[in-house]
Image (cartoon, rainbow, N blue to C red; front, side, top):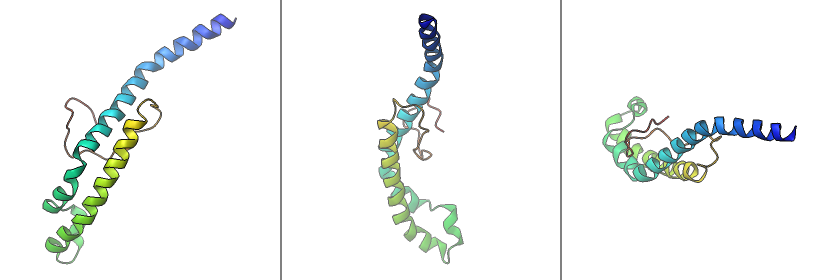
Length: 112
């Protein structure tokens, strides 16, 4: 009876391995993408301010000024979550924590 339980658990683990590998690699690719592209966030947000800043008074000036700290905070968040995704790649139960990428540095990957 013990052998049947062992073989059954092994079959279940093997059936889940494909999903675990795909989910873990997605986290790894998203984390690497975040670590490679974090430095551009402050610059891109100054050049193209977020749409949320259009409600500010004199948004053409204040939106660009507020984009500097917002972009810096976003780049810090992108680095922390990218490092988290890379570090916890083997534990596929964690969802992808990295924010949506600006550029897809690794082509052919479906980012969440």
